[in-house]
Length: 319
Ligand code: ATP
Image 1: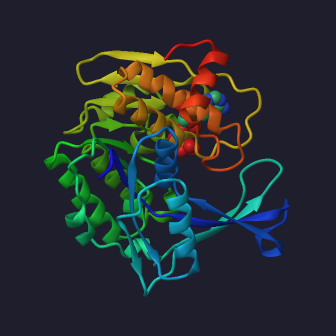
Image 2 (image 1 turned 60 degrees about the horizontal axis):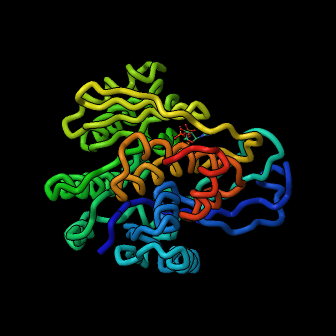
């Protein structure tokens, strides 16, 4: 088995190659692979740790592409099932010179949304030290939410440590109210909760990092809350009342912020796997987030161990 597992939906992204064109006018697309939890898996593997990604793809060319790519990133595919009745989820994405690109999803009734909870019985947790969970997978269908909850329960029963990133995707939920209730409930099942400051505002009504942390520390399993505050880094509070802020890194040119939150999660998880103290783990989260915002793709900024070392040397910080 692997040190880390995660569950999610891989998305084939057809990214426009025609700058500033409306999606209906785009003539040429480039095929890329996306998915928040997959980004985390890729980054964890790049830092030298073993990871399995749980999902379901269609018995179609996109499904085959996804599995081949995931294998190429050295992420385990033992628990990627194939569904011959539903397509692999995909998305078309605009290329824009400024601002946020338009996206359009073809993921309703995707193969991943039909991943039933039977997969959970097959998962061998014997060597698993961390599981990364996020609020996207339970949003894609009620079947996916059942599977997600059953996996979470199995992780708790087996004392596997868990991180939870709310990863809000309002368009996937039937209402904001359902999103808020479900995400806040699921967060309480995780040992470490990783909300962003903007997510805190939507989920519990405050933009104050400590108030957000205090809210999530009420969760039954939650021991630590790490609130991401963008370029400023992160605020951390533990159940025993210990609290501290960990500095962010100054980036001269932000290319694309997608994947920063996933980079943060994988930085924290990989450092904790290496028995680093929490402060160092959060610093690594900030470092990977800062590296990621300097690249155009969703996960191409995630470092190898040598690249991380070089970044710390350049920044003159010690882990
Ligand atoms: P998203 O889900 O959109 O990726 P998030 O709210 O989960 O975002 P952010 O706070 O945007 O996460 O980013 C995660 C971490 O990445 C931050 O805590 C910070 O360390 C780093 N980071 C993000 N943006 C910047 C930036 N502009 N400059 C430097 N570091 C950044």
